[in-house]
Image (tube, rainbow, N blue to C red):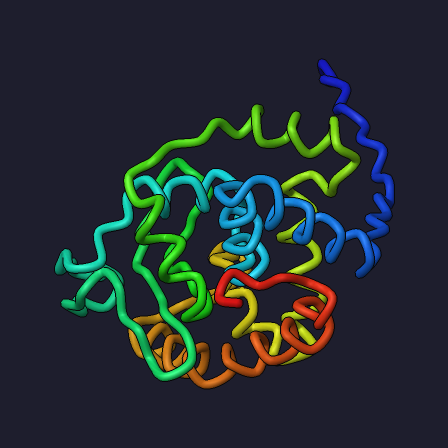
Length: 206
């Protein structure tokens, strides 16, 4: 009887040390020196998504377009702005890493309108950050998760960050999570303003 040896994998713990000071320093530098990259970093921080998705949102920003969300058959404008924040339907699924919704603050809307349709290269953004001693883009999603789970249940945070593989979503549960995300997300923004967007940082709307 032939035995095919299996591969052995070594599981390592990967510590990600992200200091609040480094996040503030990175955003402050970008705000003062590279507005477009500042917008991308804030999108990643506020929405908890990847750089590739932030770039996609900017390039494909069509706020007046009406779309159907196939998961629940909901017809909606791609951009919906509530009292304290906006959400933009992205709808990336299939073979790519998913990104269902992009949530961001009202303050970000003017920047998005200004750069709508423009493109950016992920590797160029990363090189820019490394050469200047800034946090690399992927750290913003990790930092976002750390703060987000302090402001809302983990299941809602997973939904906002499009960690769909970690969720089992029926049609009814999808609608529940969408409404729960609308309810909890402003609390996350408040937390960001409290601990990240401090008085020593220049905000885009100042």
